[in-house]
Length: 257
Ligand code: CO8
Image (cartoon, rainbow, N blue to C red):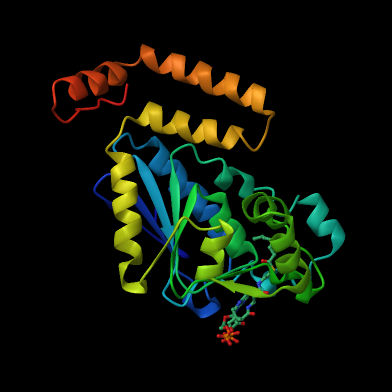
């Protein structure tokens, strides 16, 4: 498929999606959503792909939802179309997704990054939920995922004032997992994704599911869920291969089954 707002490539066993609306600092509109769904579905269906990296430009990961697209919409338009709900599919990607963020990640841009499994940021990255300055509030998960990631104090500060935080503050707060020099960003994210892609896909997907369950349930239920997944991995060839390779002091050859 020819994409209008994305560049979609494969790098080894990694799917790479680059947001590509430079004229609007990669603002997210309905076309971006439609195309992201297609790109993610294609990577999901491709057995060879073990992880996905999503990135933007040096200047902006994404500066939010497209304000010009939303400006004239009325409540009834929003409600009837259940505006934003389609982004839930993006958050539900089953293969791991890493956000490589340089420059602005604001509003929906910050929310899209938070839908990923972890965020690697360039030193130039700036995160924020400035919706309040537009007379609205975050709508794509900002009030929920940001609060879970950084806690109430920092989330309230960002959501109520609309201020931006830099990469160092984002790392201190637990929003991002690593901060790297801008010129290292893509290589670092691709190397992390390639490492993940080299592992057994069932175990990687279950690890993602297990960590995500921590946000949805009690500790007791979460521990039970984890244990059941752990047990089930002993039905895979890859568990036998991984453990045999360790004992035989060789690299495992995972078959993803
Ligand atoms: N939407 C549409 N166009 C945008 C956006 C945006 N979010 N952000 C930037 N642009 C456009 C500008 O209008 C400008 O276009 P033009 O050259 O035609 O005037 C171009 O990108 C470059 O931007 P600036 O000239 O403003 O660049 P600066 O370097 O001066 O400023 C900023 C950069 C600080 C990032 C500034 O552009 C800015 O504040 N942008 C808006 C940030 C914002 O408020 N984001 C939140 C939007 S609301 C939201 O995300 C709600 C999420 C829930 C719904 C999700 C559904 C998808």
